[in-house]
Image 1 (cartoon, rainbow, N blue to C red):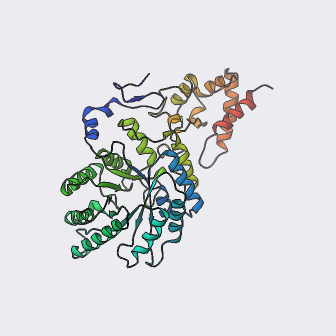
Image 2 (cartoon, rainbow, N blue to C red):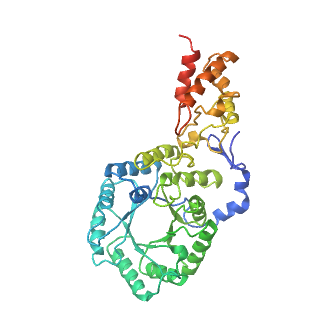
Image 3 (cartoon, rainbow, N blue to C red):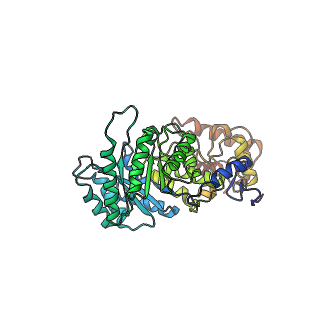
Length: 425
């Protein structure tokens, strides 16, 4: 099986997805986005680790994550700094940003600041600019139907002042508009215009509550760009409260706009659009080259897990179950054909493409059927009925002794037991 321009749903040694994904109507929708040829994917992994409840991140650990981001080839990095008491920045957030800026990583760093209404807003910006920050982003909250009223002109004047001052400092100003999906349309447009007219180079459209469906996101971005009549970069920020973080991210890229992502979907609340899921979906289901080092995904996901919290076992790509051959009619053919054969037996995506390998831990489902016999054959051990039964009894005892997750015999242990029970010296 080979891949070619006529069959883009097959990438030899990488993926084998459905031809329906490449229907002309879908491809035309993506091709219609005239903005950047390659999707602008912003990494927010460090930012989101810092905001995940219950974690105690270290500065060194966040630098490790940044190094993994750099190795994947990501060119845009974003983090937050909060001034919780208005006078001093949050110490860990500041220290992490300062350390990463001093390391001169091969990505641009965008930092979101919540000091738009502080009299001391300039101090933090100047200090960060000296360290190499090019793009500060100021957070502003638009009005909402159910959230009071105010005179918008005061806020618009503040936005104009901030963007103009940042531009005069030689920086690239950015404006974050929070809860954009539920904002007053009039205020959302008014704030955006105030920022753009006074020099903003980035409009961070933040769906703070994940109120937008994938289709709703397309409508909002399309209508907002048409209303503003601008080519300014839109950077979308959403969460995974409805389990739609990755689809919203894909839809955002389909609009030609930028998206914030994190490895393993690490974040506060219900999580974030997963970097690994978006990369793989764009490459394999939409034919959109990301230009990233996909074979580094496994490493980046592992570093993120080491420095934060392990993803759910069933999390796509980064979870323990993602590339597990977990049923007899997956495991047996893989043993017979060779586990590295293409197309993959059980997945659309070849795990080697992402730096992973398929897992074949011994599960209760494998005690019967062809798997044990195939495993013994692969190890050049006896496969007669008596030998298989002897191994089965040993493995059944191993499984019965386990009383908490994971209830399986690890693959390397399985091979040792095979040799122990049936091997010859």
